[in-house]
Amino acid sequence: MARQKVPTDPAERKAWIKYQLEINGSSFADLARATGNSRQTVRKALDIKYPKWDRAIAAKIGMTPSEIWPERYAA
Image (cartoon, one colour):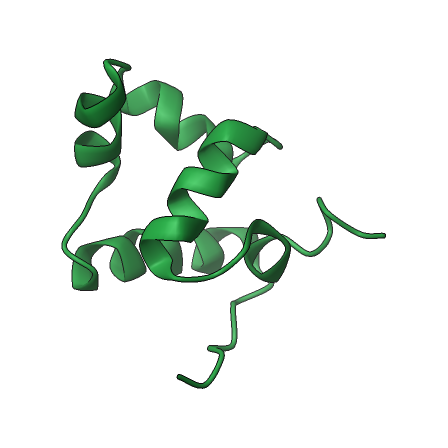
């Protein structure tokens, strides 16, 4: 599978992540329920570096956190 171009604009990236979760049969609420957390807790990863949720979101999309948020995981 070819890697997708992730938007760099924060608002576009948030919408893109939500869409990617949806087309992969998931949502922020699904991730939250699976771990006993609130949807708002999971959504925090959209705005701040939150390694646990960055990894969970990326796994559902089929990417790595550094592919979605390169500025957070720069070498």
